[in-house]
View 1 (cartoon, protein in one colour):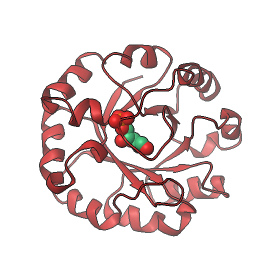
View 2 (cartoon, protein in one colour):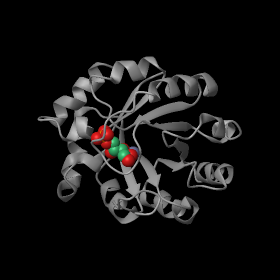
View 3 (tube, rainbow, N blue to C red):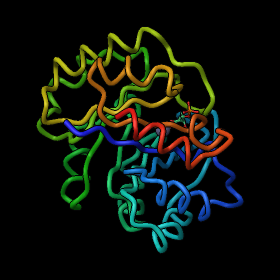
Length: 214
Ligand code: DX5
Ligand code: ZN
C-alpha cells in the first residue's frame, strides 16, 4: 500500500493559508488535511466551506476534510460543493453512520470514518462496505500540538487486521518523524502531520523528510 502524507493546516498561519497550502503542495504533500470543528463536538471552532472553496481555486491537492462536527449530515452537500475530495465523519457524531458514508460516496467522494481514542473499532464492523478510509485519532480531537497516545499503536494494528488492505488507515494527532515508523509498521498508510510540518523551522523540508521516510 502506498503511504500518503496529509499535512494539517490547523497548525499553519490561518492568515496566510493559500501560501501554506502552496508550500506543502510544491514540497510533495499528497493530501491537504482540513480540520473542521464546530465548538460542540469538540471545544474548538475552525473553518468551514467558504474557506475551503477559496483554497480549492488554487490547489490541486486532494482535500481531506476531517469533520469534527455533530450531526454532519447537515453539511455534507456544502463541503462537497466547496471542493472536498474525502469527507471523514466521526462515528461518535453520526448516529446514522452507514447512511452518512454511503451518501458521501453517492456524491462521488471518498468516505472516511473517524474514531476517538476511546472508541472501540468494533463499531466499524458493519460499515466496512461503505468506507474508503478509517481515521484512528491518536489524540483526543480539538487541538493541534498534543502528544501521541501510545495505546493507539495497538489500535492501528487491530484496525488493520479488521479492515484488510483495501481500506486506508489514517492516523491523526502527535505524529512526528520520531514515531512515524512505529505507526506505519502498525499499518497506517495516510499520515496527518500538523505541528511537525507547519511548526517546523522549515515546513517544506519537513514535508520532504516525511516523504523520504515513507
Ligand atoms: C486534532 C486534529 C488534527 C491536528 C493534528 O483534533 O484533528 O488534525 O491538526 O495536529 P498535530 O499533528 O499537531 O497533532
Ligand atoms: Zn484532523
